[in-house]
Length: 95
Image (cartoon, rainbow, N blue to C red):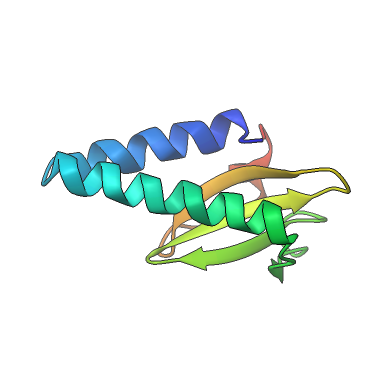
């Protein structure tokens, strides 16, 4: 599952990359969604990010970071942020 804020992140990533190359934007999102599917499929634990939000995990992907919570039956992607972006708790509150 992808939370609303993460969907917004994905749209913004696509829009930003598409300014230079629509093809590259589509390819990047395809690779990114494949990485998310892999995380869910293998139940990858990722790096704990409890200092940001309890139960939060993170996996780097190129210059981005996929933030998610893992449950018994699914993962929920909360955000997909650039590595240079601030990751304080407020950025995850609406997820």
